[in-house]
Every structure is written in structure tokens, then in C-alpha cells.
Image (cartoon, rainbow, N blue to C red; front, top):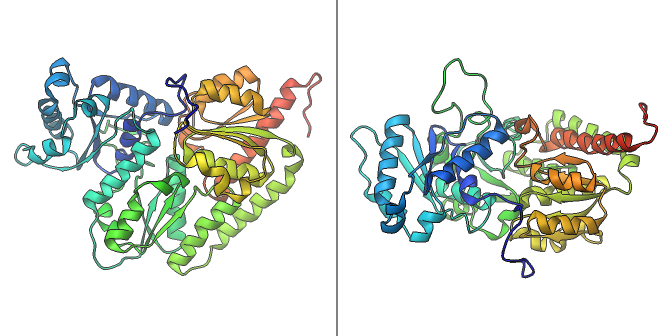
Length: 446
């Protein structure tokens, strides 16, 4: 906890835990997220996700009223389960709690244990505790992934399978993770996988349950994988799906950061090499060479640049390491999370010795004050920083979640050599466009 933080927040640099839970459940085939709490929570989260992914998002609610808030929400949740089961015939209902149900102390596990569905209408049910007043959307996301694996994974003979547990990344990055695992001869169990459920094609008819997602059968097989790979440095201090599978099923767990940049992507591919026994494919080696060439081409543009980075902890740390790799000083690295970012300066040698400040558990009020002192030339983060970019008159390279004021967030790739190349070009071109716009004479050749 940041002891200097005030007891209030001005435009928090995070979103709530039930949103992360809803996003994770949307990555399971045939699943419907159900928030146990007031209707407003589901409406807010639906709006947030839709404006980022630009696809329909259904989130059910137990719709607490005054009586439920006083006497408990057992009846409300039971009715909601009946309605969802009847209307959607889902494969799974993911029940996540909100502030209201957590505050009154509803025993959701007991409610689900004693719930009796109508005959012939049963489905899997997974519960996760996600009060909005504790943690961030990233915490809710990882808690849900863990709950799914704990509830569904089974053991058995090993398969040519690798469990991949990514952080919150774009659908196109999820597709890259699946393609890359298959290039090494491994079938991926990617959890969650919302690459189709939140970035699918045009429908001829409306689908209540969008196609795609990790199937329940695939999650069951997670206990039979050769190994698991967890992507995201924020998972170091928490109980995770990978650690659970290692402890209960003996599956080796590789904990890595998001593969953004050459060094981090090298580490991810090296892990797949160890798991599969195969070398890095030539196609990926060629992508690496092109990225190195881009680094050399643009070094004179990036020399002396200072960036303010913000986002969830996984993204913020990955971006800070990437900036240091390409010669940009991550002058300020900020997040609404309270865990990994506080110790990141000491944990990563690449960030030591830089004129960098790390600001955990923050909001945009404090972030803005710190940004002015950091003397940046570039902002890197999500759309919630657009107001700060206008105030500082600096370019903002949009990365992470949420991206509400631009189209294409589902395809803003950052992972792997090709995704890093896309991000690198955006950063360089953002700096050049800013110089060009502010030039008294302008120029069209560089």
C-alpha cells in the first residue's frame, strides 16, 4: 500500500475487479458472466467492455433491491440463475460478487451448493469473490482464471499441451499466442480466450452466446499439460492458476512477463523451446531480425526521449522494460495496482540506474502532478490518459485497456516480435507527428 496516497481517488488508474472477472468469463465457451449485486454494476461493465471491443457483451445481474440489501440476496441470485439458465442454456455461469453482496456477507458458495435448477437445464457454475473495493480489474481477472482451473481441471496422462495464462491483452495477441504454441508442435490451452467471443466476425443472425472461447473440455485437460506458462509480472505474489496446477498436478510452471520487445519475447520463446524440445521457427527468427533493424533505423528519433507509462501492472512493467530496451527513459511508471510495481525498480536490472519514478496505487490526479515533474516527451498508456495528454500537449500512444476513443483496440498488438514492431512504429511515428505539428514551417520528408 502506498502510505502517501490520500483516502480518495480522482479518475482512478484502474477499473473494478468484477470487470476483470466478466472479461475472463467471456473467454470461456458458452459462458455467461453473472454479477451478484445491483443492476448498475452490470450496466457499467457492459458499457466499458463494449466501447473497447466494439462487440456485443451480455452480463447478467441478480439485480439487488432494497430488500435484498437488508435481508440477503439468496432469492435474487436464485432467480437470476433460473433466468440465465432458461434464456441462454449456457455451458457455464460465472458468478462474480460485487461490493453490495460482499458487504452484506452473502454466502454465495452455499447458495450455489443448494441451488436446484429446473430439470434438464443444469450447467457448470463457478464462483469468484471480486468486491470492487479490493483490488483492480487485473486482480478480478486473475482470481477468475484461478477459480476456473480449481473448479474444472482434472489430472491424467500427459498430453502435447501447454497451458497459457496471459494477462489482459487484445484478441489479436491471443491469436498470436495460439499460433506460436502450435509452431512448436504444442496444442495451447489458452485461458481465457476471448479472441472470437469479443472480436468475432459479422453475424447473419444474432447469437446470444457468441462462438469461440476455451471449452470446458479444454479447461479439464489443463491438468494434463506438459507445462504452463503465466505471462505477467504482477502474479509473483498471488496464488495463480499455474501454481495451483503445479502443486496439485505436478505441472511445471514458467512465470514470465508479457513478451513485449526482443528480450521478453526471447524469454517466452525459450520457454516454448524447453517445453517442446524444438528450436525457434525460422519465421519468428526473421521477425526478430526485422525488429532489430527497425531499432537501428529509428534510434536517432528516440534518443533523449522520456516517457510516462501507465496501465495495469502487467502492461506498465512490460512497457517500461520495452522503453528501456529501445533507448527511451521510462521517466514515470504508474498503475492503480498495489503489488508488483512497488518493487519493480529493484527487481529488474534493466530499469536500475535510470531516472525513473514508480508510482503504484495511484490515480490520475497524482499521476498528473508527477508527470509534470518527470519532464516527459511522450505518454504511453490507455485512453484514460487522453485528458492528461491534452493538458501537457504531448502525444499519447494508446496501449492496453481501455481504449475508448479510437477504433481497433482489439487489434492493437503488442506481443511477440511483430506486435512489438507495431508498437515501436506507433511510438516513433507519434513523436514525429508531434514534431511536425509543432514545427513553425512543417516538413514532409524525413
